[in-house]
Image (cartoon, rainbow, N blue to C red):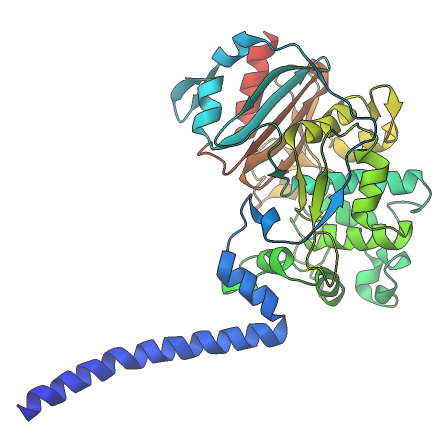
Length: 405
């Protein structure tokens, strides 16, 4: 009897000991995280873990007021477009069905400055809030161009220490604004660190992104001038915009772009925290779909919207279009490897299926603003996920071809 009890006791201890060790290790990790960063950061990671399109509800926000002179697209709906055949995983669906089946929340096509197709799905409507994820980076590029046009910033060739004085006399300070825009700086970025210690998690969930960007000064030579996606870049550009314009990034965006494109709805820009009040530069613009589409129309028309020039046309040409053919070695071992897509100043570009080159703002879960100048078409796709579509860029090209032929 005693031997049986001893055996059970050993088995129980054998179970409890590793469980206790795991709990202790987890507790130590949590304490370490709190000491290194903050309780808020840890709480966000443990509560949410991965980013979602509803995260605008998680973060505080700064409201971007709608235009005093709202602009509404003329609607000339082409009902035939609903029946365009779209291939997905070797299955053919009508466009209307494809939108529903791919977690898409809005899909709008503007052709010749008129809405010819408009569909909201999966619980969303025309006044639902969508989030940009990394489409926000393309807006940051526009704002840098506007700050240069206004004389707040002299040139993209300036070292960032000209505007971020904390970097004076530091090696990181010699990085140029252009290095940041091109995603080709030497700033270390490691998304694959253990658990939540990677830079993807830090630059998304941390509650003082200014402090994070200013303290992250380690450089590396392993990128050798090649493209390397780095979310510290838009954070630093946000600091440069703040310091050079004397305004919050949201206010500058509201006055210089949002008001001027006739936004019909308020937007917002998610903040790292109420205390810090710094915009989530890498991902945080939240909007109603039809208004974000107007940014695409402005880019399509070389900086003009409804007859008013908003952004310098030379800036748009220089900032959006890569040199083709692209140098594939620059994108080796990145998510653009093997794709005929280049990256300029936080915009993507790719050869059009018809002629010329198309311009793309692109965010997680395939939030896509697709601009095709040769076809005078702008397409916006927002979604909860990528919907199982392996290549949304090629899918949109396929839809474009069907529209124009």
